[in-house]
Length: 206
Image (cartoon, rainbow, N blue to C red):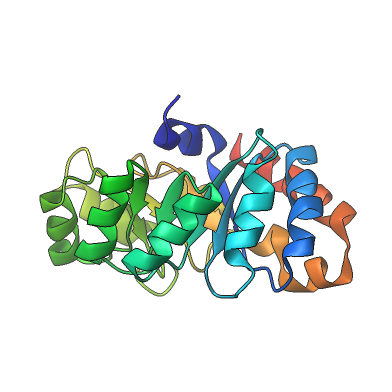
């Protein structure tokens, strides 16, 4: 399966913020144990690249980089083992660097104009971010109508309570969420709870 197929198979992408790369390995183990061998590690902290490396070296996880804002961060992410790159907005420079590396780019797009720009760059899937404040499932369904074939990965404001509403939209390939990998749980080292919440979330996607 290619990267997009694997994301579609997972249906849910844990969005991870790690302050300490030492937490990456136990967090990865907790996600896999919960039945979700996928993660988006955000470049919001200095530990991002090292965390991606630790997770991707396991060999049994699909690991991506999130909050990627520059081509240089794309280079860092790919060198660390990221299979896909997620951006909050649409940057031609970031998308083109991803294409040079041969990795999937998922830029943020919430308007028809941004979506057309993404299509012009040859993309078939975009991140819909921030989903909760940009109209949620109804907005995605409305945008999907004129852009047949385009798929979305909504992130931001997705929770266990509304997960099913997003996944019910045919154009949604997967959703991104962070409730099962909260910074509080990671800081506390409560990886058993991460596994429990992950298993619970996976059950909701089926």
